[in-house]
Length: 489
Image (cartoon, rainbow, N blue to C red; front, top):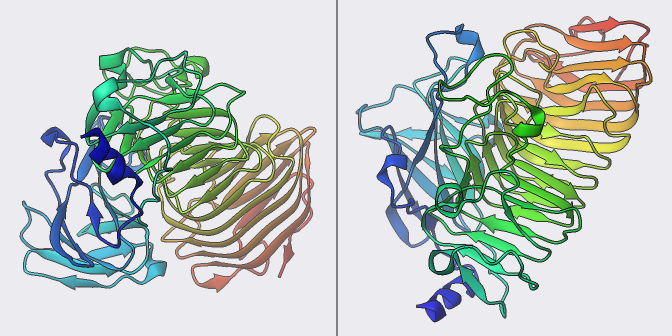
């Protein structure tokens, strides 16, 4: 059995369809959706659909302050086009179906029991059925992955199902494999979410399709070249949420809000040179991923329901590609130099910024680039200091060289940007290029100099509601303090 497992894990990726078989726990299955996939030589293969429920009490709070009632998702992998058929057991037919990002032009064909569509390229796709309100109650996410890379040969595999966690005093790196099934590191192995199961330099953690791991992973500041990858799920499901400083979000959340107590990230890799690829992250109590310098994050998917459930905190020189974020705080924290983010899909819920580069302290001082982004929903509806898709809260240090380009915002947008600079802070050489907001700006865009300053802000080919922004008025721009007018191109 061990030999067979080794062979299966080290074979090159086959030119075939791989669906998520599910973890073997039917309580995690979505009762709302059924997904069948065809691709390559495989036809009509069912892919397990997960669910994560929002435990907030919808009856107590205004409608404009909450996200979906539940997230539903499935993951598939293939090296060619796949055809997806979606049905709903409790709804025999659909009236309307929309696939986002709309920029990908996916066409939907109605069927007798639901809808069919073909995906040509890997990526994250939101399937919205009979719900076109800005707040979608039951989104279905289809994560179409490229085939997995082969795991390195010549390394022994530490199979968690057979051996549990490797010893903490090991001196050599391990390849820790989680097979299909539910693996609860917190309840069954006594590993708290903070600091999580500690990894060492060179470790590889692999979550197979259908692996659902409840727990967290971390490393110390000396660690290097750690990899977490696969097609499974890492979750904080069932762990007590930190009580929000604004209001309790769950009746049994008895932990008072504290950022020190709150730092229970699903992945907290200090050090440098790490890689996280392919996984789904859900139900965190704080960040999904917080990663060190010179790292790479690819094709991950992050969900979060509560305040401070950010997507990614990024170290200096880190590169991010092809990720999906649907969290309830900042999607990306750009608090370090030379961060490069590209080809991502964001569903911004009602709290936090899509791109946050200061929170009352020094942020990046140079060189952040964000390009080729689809923001498929902006659920901001009420004023707060972090309600801009591009956000900077009370910056108090110099910052320069920020470029945001090729960004598409679907529907209305509360604020495209809200940048607040206080004493000692400055923003220079900020470029917003090739950005389109499909709908309206519901509030306004803001440049706020509260003792700080702005210099060389360039607005290049930005449109709102199909009309080019050629001056502050058409950009719906409000300027506070001594702010020089942006350069419009």
